[in-house]
Length: 222
Figure 1 (cartoon, rainbow, N blue to C red):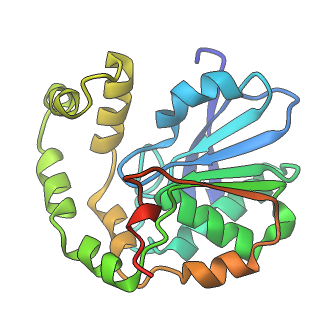
Figure 2 (figure 1 turned 90 degrees about the vertical axis):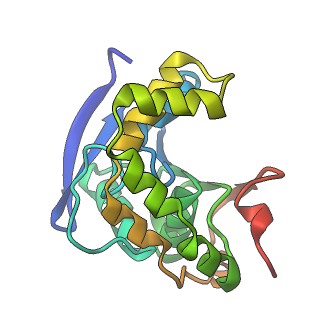
């Protein structure tokens, strides 16, 4: 990671921090999920950087990006991504998003298909209204609020119990990202999400949907 660069992009009246591998290669933008940040993609990027100029932004309220007082809807996140693409003057990139980042990527693709070369959605938050309400009413935000009062070592230790097979480096990356996630970022959990069926019907770029047995998409109630 020593030759990767970091920078700030001003868009939508806020600063978006991003990490970039660089090189004269096709651009690939990776959008993370809630409570993580751009460099949480590090393990995957070590493989991808051989063929792509990989750009890993921190979503607003996450990592080293700004924490505005409001504006955490998926439309706001999508506008940040569009602004990043335009500010960096990128040729059409492939956009890969996970969970919250997956829904954000879908919104970008449905609104600005001409900006993208391709789309990969990994367990996007395509949730029914019922599941959206269940997530909102869960204790996920309260758990995070308590974690913000913990030390890095304590967060790492807790993560190790849940993910014993992850490397120490990965555990620390995710723990640091967790501690850099503001409470404001949880506003994205407030229903309603964009209607994913309408979004998908409007997407006109080559795309791939990935999901696991216990992923977000598998929780959708039709």
